[in-house]
Length: 456
Image (cartoon, rainbow, N blue to C red; front, top):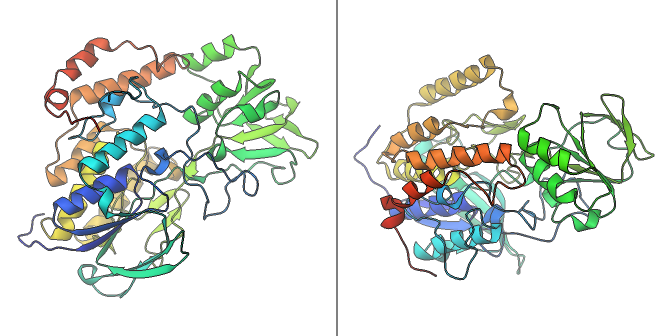
């Protein structure tokens, strides 16, 4: 829906990761006053590598107020090629003197995000080293249009708490920090080392150990591939023993790499018993079991809750019907091409706040959410996977709300070909690929030939 009004709002964006910085840009483009509150010393969110981890006092990451935000490990490289990882008007191009690889390091991606902030002058509106402690409605009970938000934050160096009032708040704090842990019999009594991949940084501390990695998704496979080269034995515990060709090749290559079923129980003597009855004595259990959505600072009077990793209710994974558009959450969906989607979220939020666009009624939004939940349940998809999209068409449809261009075909095709290569050639997929023809076609499009920006 379109409105003729245009208003300027005072907006607080929480988090200066990829979603936060592009939403901030879109808000400013629409004429809003924007401040971004970032708890770290620099932009990047997850991509701001932090070698300091909570291993000593909280190796499983159970404290909702984590000391370290990033879950990135030292050697991590992008899973998707750089061509598809850029914003729609700012290509992730090779820069002189930097990592030129098609699947570059996490450091190179952080530098790209910093380039974006410099080019679009986003850095100047970010308050660094500022941790948000509380976000809640100032005048709960009024109409959504009149709702204002109290934001209480603390500056790291001075330890001073500051309270401010905003017309709107955008939560952009990411979803790869708060560990999601399994429930395993004996887990609390097992006295050897247990940790979540959130605090994994390098394989060296595990040299010579017998290690059990729990979880056979991307992080479990990638970390296992690192560990197997230094540990005595690597046991990868998986829900399913039906594995892809790429992992099968790795297991065949390394004699000390063992695929195991799920863990049945743990015992104080260090034993790990699997559901097939087999048992080993391990030094370390590393849980690569994913992450939970967590917003410990957010007080919505129960209007937005996290239930089995479903954040809701959210219209289009973004807007709480009873609080929108003054409150929105960005970057919630998983398994999508993130940066273009974050852009479209930013444009929609900005135009809703300026009055250019109008959301459907509360009743219509709730009906849409309920129908979406029902479709997931009918398809047998667990609640915890509510926000896993894996659908280019959804991103295109979402963008239609603000006339955002559809994803380019080359972007979709290069994304798919990289995923296929990953499943077939796990160990070599970042340095050897089979989509050069499609890559060259993409590099001749206006996106790459007309949107080049100077080196920074």
